[in-house]
Picture 1: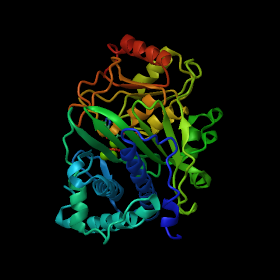
Picture 2 (picture 1 turned 90 degrees about the vertical axis):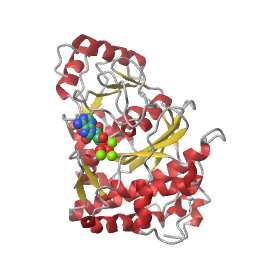
Picture 3 (picture 1 turned 135 degrees about the vertical axis):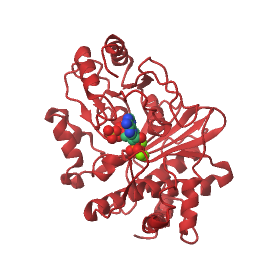
Picture 4 (picture 1 turned 120 degrees about the vertical axis):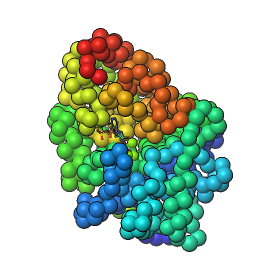
Length: 396
Ligand SMILES: Nc1ncnc2c1ncn2[C@@H]1O[C@H](COP(=O)(O)OS(=O)(=O)O)[C@@H](OP(=O)(O)O)[C@H]1O
Ligand SMILES: [Mg+2]
Ligand SMILES: [Mg+2]
Ligand SMILES: [Mg+2]
């Protein structure tokens, strides 16, 4: 790679009007780009060597070198940019597993991954550490993300790898970073390393199973895949940039382009997306809703908040998630997606039509039955009415 400094000067954020949060948005987008490249490398190595860097947490959900490494680099970049005293972060991961005496190999792998990534910071117009981080500095960067959130002040919300299951399966996943102020998400940044830039790859005529396989098959290497989507609350616009890549010699993509939700509001033409794992969302309930609303297309089942990206880009019109009773949705699984959808022209509510609540800690407190994301009010109203009509007969 040539002198990375050459590229950082060309760094530009079209339409980054000099308004509130522009510096925070710029730093967040750069950090997510860095995290995307880190994840692509780790995913390739994971799939190639199956190097056992996948651990299980107490709740039996997976966590990998990528989850911890992304949390460390985002924490470091934000603290470097704004001062650690001014940065408060709510994030999914902690150092419980990494700190164990028998995890030293994992901690070494995370530290190596973090330092490789941070060394490239100048490609993104950011400062690199003067010396590589030590393992204890990496642990500190991860554990520093221990804010409890709330309704006052500002804090960042990070899901370092959303859809870790998809990540370890070589499928879709996302890096989700949001800024919340006064209890409301004000910035949303979603890195989607495996999601193709070119909408044509999501052509609807082939049926959705093929689309999923095309999204994740080895031919995907030939796609121009990977993007970072971002939006600022109240700006009225959502943006998408292609991912930086070594092939493109890290030339910064000043081709950020507008994205908008789909204009389709006829259920017969609309597509809905939902989680892959039926343990995470009731496929039978959504199938019933689809039937009663008149949705004809097969569901697009995709891991992670890439589902929010699909709606924001106009590749699908509805995202529905109905977790089993008792499951509490985390703010890091939705904050970034909500801002992006709203600014791309879509609607996000719970099944009662209420906005999601990000002001009461790490959970979406008071969520009514499920989450409904639509490209427009007409489809949204139909889905809400269908949920009301069928909820009592559901076993949820
Ligand atoms: N039981 C259950 N019910 C509902 N949601 C759950 C459940 N378990 C996990 N999660 C959270 O869902 C995140 C994955 O969401 P996805 O939409 O990717 O689900 S799926 O993997 O496509 O089925 C996943 O996010 P990550 O842990 O960041 O991958 C979890 O936070
Ligand atoms: Mg997880
Ligand atoms: Mg998640
Ligand atoms: Mg996660």
